Image 1 (cartoon, rainbow, N blue to C red):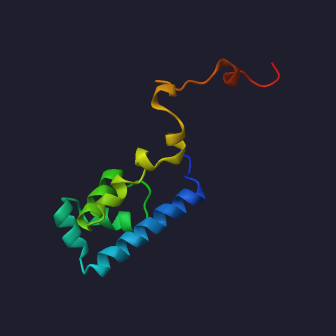
Image 2: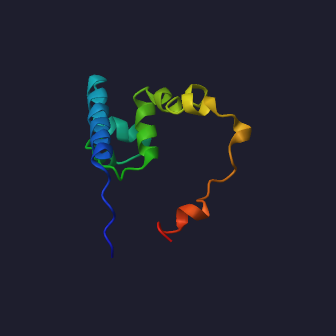
Image 3: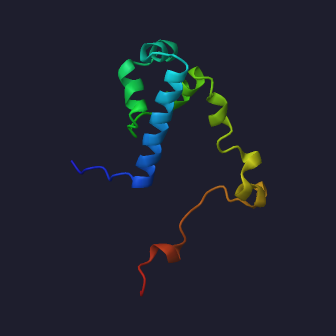
Length: 111
């Protein structure tokens, strides 16, 4: 079976920092791993994987834990279209329904 391509280092660093920050936030609130697990319905092992920065942990786990920590609102506004500077420069009607590669982009260079 072919091996999955590795994630870029900046992504891995970000995920690792996020996990460490979640662990710190949990400890500051004096919550045990089992408290988070009980509140979210997840296993302690899953919470540990998230806190260790395992990039394969589902985004739903992150959202669940952040809600228990009282920080769910941060994710809700993460890419809020009202504050998306690039998106605000474009109008909704100008956006295509789909984005496809142009034929010129698919042809090898020099042909």
